[in-house]
Each structure stands twice: as C-alpha cells, then as structure tokens.
Length: 263
Image 1 (cartoon, rainbow, N blue to C red):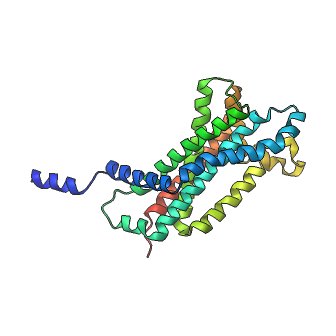
Image 2: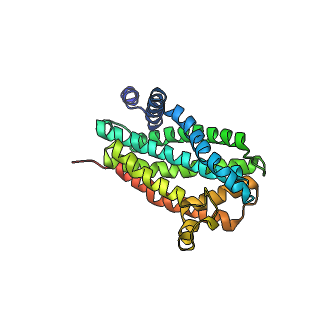
Image 3: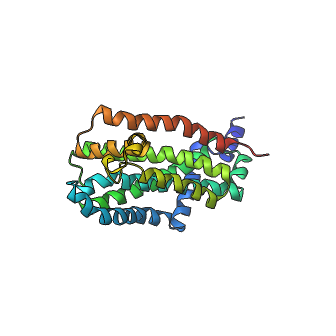
C-alpha cells in the first residue's frame, strides 16, 4: 500500500510544483515574446511623454513636477501590467489551454496563481524601471528607505488587485484584442481625470469632486506623500479602502472565472 501511495504521488505533483511549472512556463513566454522588454520601456515612454511637455508649465506654478508626476507614471505602468494579464488569460482561454487544464489533475487555482505570479514579476520589473527613470528626471524618496518600501508595496498591491480583475475579464471574453481595447479606455480616462498629472485646481469646478475621490487620485496622493514623508491617516485611508474594496470584488471574480466550466 505504501508503494502504491508513492507511485500515486509521483504521478500527481503537488499544487506547489504545478504552480511553479506553470509560472516558469508563463515567464518563458513573456521573455520569448518580449513582454519584459516592454515592461522596461513602457514607463520610459510615459515619463518622456508626460514630463517633458508639462514640466515648464508646472514649474511656473512652483510645482516640482518630477516629484508630483512619479506616482501616476508608476500607476500607469501597473495598469499596463494588468492589461497584459488580461491578454494572457484571454489567450489561454481562446486556445483551449484553460479548458485542458481543467480536465487534468491540476490543483484548483494553480493556473490562476501562476498567471498572478508572473504578473507580479512583470510589475516588479516595470516598477524598478519606472523608479530609475524617475531618478533621472529628479524624483527622490526624501523620507528614506522605509517610505520607499511602502511606496513600492502599495504600487505592487494595486497592480496585483488590478491583475486579478483583468484576468477575470480576459478569461470570460476569450478575445485578446477586445479585452485590451475594453481595459485601455477606462485606464486612460481615469488617469487623465485624476490629480496624477495636474493638481485638482486645474480642473473645472463641476468635475472636481469626481477627480478628487476617484481611486487613481487617491492612490497618487498617498504614494506622493509616501515619497515625501508627509503621510497622514486621512490620506492613506482612502487609498487603502479602495484597495480592500477592489480586492473583495475582483479576487472572487477572478476565482469564479478561472473555475467556471463552459458548456
């Protein structure tokens, strides 16, 4: 009986092994398709595209624009990681890989967590690149290493939560092109209608309540204060509340979508 159990365990890898193998497969695909290179170049494009045109205007208003802009550059890069996660999930659903994995002795949730792990790695790469570009234009963590770690932790937490939601959308849509288009527009609208690029005073009075309270503005404000060391509960609480609220909705949605069996 012991010999039978050993043979059975040999043919049925643990959930950890399955997660590791699927994660390694996804990372190899990312490297082969140049996704990690895009993760490095994307924040450079954002930095050049937004910093150079607006630097002079903001300097007239007495704003250190490199310091002001860096959070939204990071958030934009995190959003593109989420879009990439949606495309990957959609591709796996479209090609039938997700369905095949459901017919195999794969631990529940292993494919989803493998995709999230690869998304986390991509987020870490693009976050590192974004901060390096930020240092080139003059961004600094004036509050020290502790606040810098909080800044990075919040950015990665936001990216992870968004990746769960994007993965659910990609899994359900089964169309990488449609998924990308559906997610890009809201990201651009929320980004432009936020205090990430310009202060609240730069918007018309009628839209300021929305601009001030929407999640991108709350995330930007909290991360900006983290970098400058002036973080207060009144600033960080709304950002954390948004992260928790989105997690309670998007993570269960991703689990349901990944486990859902199609007729």
